[in-house]
Image (cartoon, rainbow, N blue to C red; front, side, top):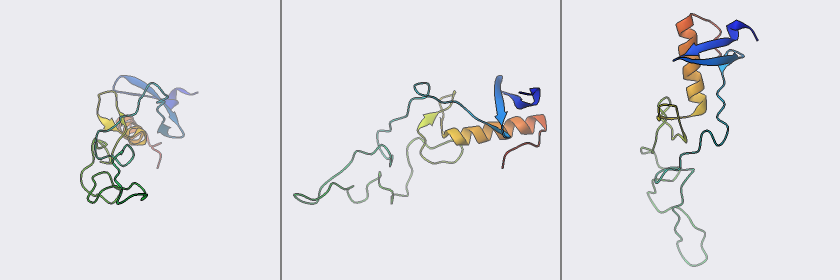
Length: 116
């Protein structure tokens, strides 16, 4: 590994892999956030329309894919529902955080290896 493959950002060292920072969020280091309401992945709200009918979301359910209103814990970068938090406790997606750190670190060093 070359010295050029290491980038320091906010006092932490990161390794560039093909021009991008890759974070290791192996379990149990980054437990999932389980949202109380509004998340399409964590939803447990179901109703039946009659005996023997399959459970479905109720009309105007905030958990449905069709719901376009605000979701809980939006990612600070893209706004989508996030299931992880960064080291400062802000909700993020791993890929969004990797891209943000890569862009900021490489911009600060004047490096042009930023991955597309």
